[in-house]
Image (cartoon, rainbow, N blue to C red; front, side, top):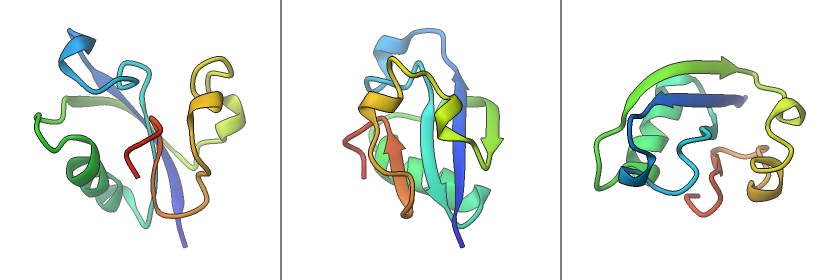
Length: 88
């Protein structure tokens, strides 16, 4: 069974991080620890993960930003990163 997570980070300069991270990161994983591991392995390979300031477990993706997140994500059904697109 998988859970959808939405992470927001405490970032002072979005240009230090991959595109989209200023909005947040969507991950589907077995649990919180697995979600963080996926982000570390796929999203934060060359930079240190910033401090997580907010986590929404079982996020309803329909409530996320309709102008930026929804059109730039992949399906959140399977295990992996679904926003930003391109880090599966």
